[in-house]
Length: 347
Image (tube, rainbow, N blue to C red; front, side, top):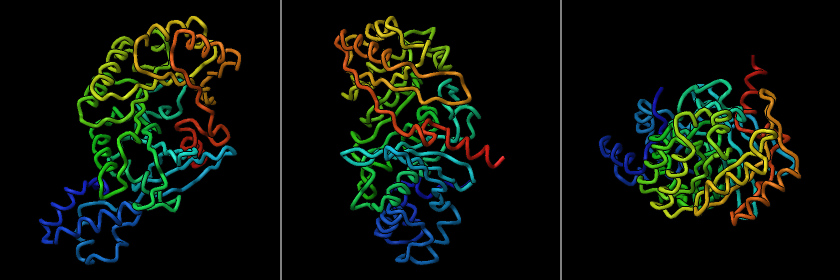
């Protein structure tokens, strides 16, 4: 499989064009048009011979939206088809400040978290940096945005896959997303959600990128976390919290702990007290999430009264708590659901 041309940074593209005997300004032309959503083959102000030469080595921006599901709450879920016909997902959420796009970092996932549909079929492959960037570009074009008038205002690496299991391509994506010749996102407008690969959290802290970290915690102790998140068998909850403290020390970015409330699993008052003690003294927010139920498992969301008691208990310990408004429940909103439904229909 060829490297996607969107995986080239502006500097890499410029170097490639110099080797091909092209003037340096061609790099800005091509990079600008690609990030505006054009295919290389459709760029009209460069020589045809140059396009043909580049396409011998690189694949074009061939990511396409093949299905859109629209929720009653305004959320939209995209099913993207990649060049090799693999399918990935993205979720577009509308807020007062603009649009936030959740992007995928892998086809499938190897983490096998019990509450998530993404890992039901395991990991198929990692996405190239250009395929991650391509999701943003295609969605921005779908909203009739461009480089000068960007419609997708925030990016969250929170779709299918574990971003820190595809570390090198995610770091390269950050380089692409923050490049001034492209869509030019500020690091504060990019978030990464991870289930907790401790060595790569520390590595990211030292990378120089100061993006927001959303840690999928979902348990207040090791025993429960191991039951619902196999990654906990490799990294203890205390190691994970220590890595998050390190990330804050290196970047100054407050940690967002994501906590899905699952009935009879992790939402008792005792769990809330354990959680409060676990994060005591940290500059953090705990974001409580209603479980988006997946038919392939037997997990159920807890009652509203249980959610309220859990939140109030945390607040009693001085913890900053938010509750994420539930989005996309009527459109296969959970990670991996839409892709799985589509594949099942094809089979």
